[in-house]
Amino acid sequence: VYAEQGNHVLAESKINEAIIILEALEDYYGISEYLTYMSDIYRERQDMKNAISYAERSLELAQRNGIKKQLSESNLVLSELYEQSGNTLKALGFYRQHITYRDSIINLENVQKAFDIRTTSELSQQEKVYELQKKNQRLILYATALALFL
Image 1 (cartoon, rainbow, N blue to C red):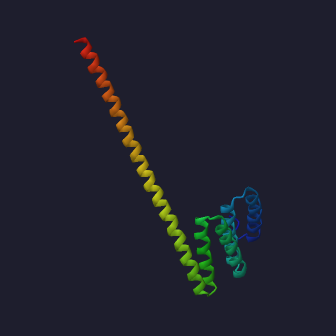
Image 2: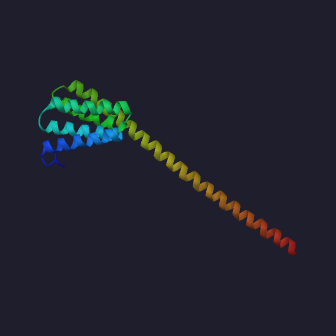
Image 3: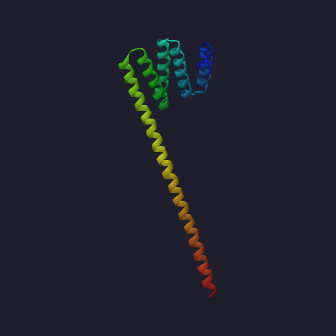
């Protein structure tokens, strides 16, 4: 919020405080995300060297901890930063990595959705079978009782 309001000094201070807390909690996803926020602050200040440095730290942290969403995001940020810096070849490399991780995330989400649909369908089918078995047991019970009285 402070960064959006243009108060970059306060934003930087608060983000650094948050990163210290997140390090104690070992919340590497949050740290990686906040490092990209720091990169954005430096980008707005036109300090591309520090902007790239923070984005690279975010990427390294995401790589060390296998955080695919942040791998995608950090690569995208680096792609934009290098493009703004005029290094289109490096920008393209990071953009390709962003696309790879983004597609991987989308594929995982689609597999999870398919699994959820299949599980729900199988559970529904099992419930139907169970209800039919209960109905058949009642019919057998009634038929047996009727046969005993006849």
